[in-house]
Image 1: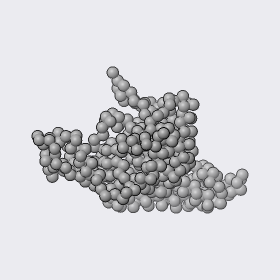
Image 2 (image 1 turned 120 degrees about the vertical axis):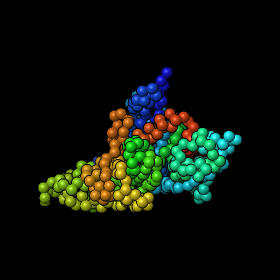
Image 3 (image 1 turned 90 degrees about the horizontal axis):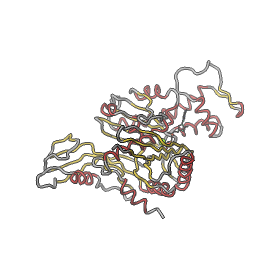
Image 4 (image 1 turned 135 degrees about the vertical axis):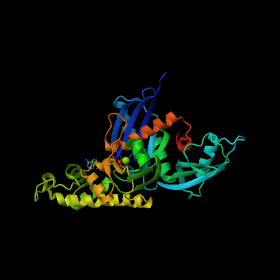
Amino acid sequence: MAKSIILNALDIGTGSIKVLVGQKDLGTQDITILGQTQALSFGVRKGEISNPQEVSQGIVAAKEHLQKSGAAKIKKVLVNIAGSHLYSLQSQGLVSVSRADQKISKEDIQRVLQASRALNLPSNKEVLNVFAKEFVVDGEGGIEDPLGLEGIRLEAKVLLVCAFSPVLENLGSAVTEADLEIEEVIPSPLASARACLTPQQKELGVGLVDIGAGNTGVSFFETGKLIDFAIFPLGSANITNDIAIGLRTEIVTAERIKKEFGTLSFKKRKKKGSKIEIPEKSLSFSPKFLKDIIEARVSEIFSEVQKELKKISKQNLLPGGIVLTGGGSFLPGIVEFAKHKLKLPCRLGPPRNVPGIEDLAFSTCCGLLLSGFDSRERGRERVFEEGMGAKLRKLFKMFLP
Ligand SMILES: Nc1ncnc2c1ncn2[C@@H]1O[C@H](COP(=O)(O)OP(=O)(O)OP(=O)(O)O)[C@@H](O)[C@H]1O
Ligand SMILES: [Mg+2]
């Protein structure tokens, strides 16, 4: 008999907190959204939780809003982690195959992944996720799944995702103070990639750029595997701040101007000479003045993306191109601008496979939900992509009264 799973995704962003409650029918594979909410976020700076108490109040408000709209009470969440404290490291592990018949077992795979995360990290840093890139059995590489193969030496080449422990602790206390339990912690760029990229793009080689309010996350894939990810402390809120300074106006007005008149489009919006007027704020400025402010900041964001492409030697070399998502990608003309700047095919990437949700700002939240369904369907025991879920659950339970 077909069953269904209900999961809750919580995206704690710099600009807003977003929650999705989704149900997946394991028979038909259909996903239905049972609840959705978005509320202003406080206590998050450049993607990192700086004030857990404020964040926790925001989560409680979002929970209450969901319940008022008729959704069931939520208890466990899949939650994101962001901020430029997150970084990736290449690593490898090596173990001897343990069984007498030399067949590689699940335990051997777990041991080799465990060995690959045994690094000498500073005491305030920890490994959050381990992504296996390939396994090597007796020197034979390129193996995706070594389970059941015969061999003596098993090696794993992995990408580790590392985090700054105090930020993880802040995340733990913000969520548990809101009376919720953490089911899994997923870095935002990886969640967004899960929601916005197709398996074909990942196979070809692709980069995802999620421009949020306070930070921009990038993740790169090749032959279906994650090869790199990074987070920069720059986002669309920086554009708003620049507009506020440039026009000597308050943030709320600058945000409104950005959304209403902001564009990177090369085409002229207005006839030459015509000005944008905001009479109630006594503002009058040329579209070019606004475009120049926006362009400088967006250019800075794409320079960071370009640096990361250079780091992994993929400049002009991603056949699947660059996919833009996150609320910052709503800016008109950003796709053309990115193409011009990065010299790669670029397109917008709204979340896929979550019926009814195509909002660029909901990509991380959709990705959390989809990743949660993936983990549940694979079974609780995750073999090739070790998460910190279990460890964090224990850790966070200690915060509970
Ligand atoms: N139409 C629009 N034009 C320009 N910018 C927009 C538009 N709509 C939303 N934005 C910007 O998108 C940003 C919010 O995006 P998003 O919700 O993805 O960020 P977040 O997840 O809260 O933050 P972060 O991921 O950085 O922690 C805001 O800075 C907002 O001004
Ligand atoms: Mg975000």
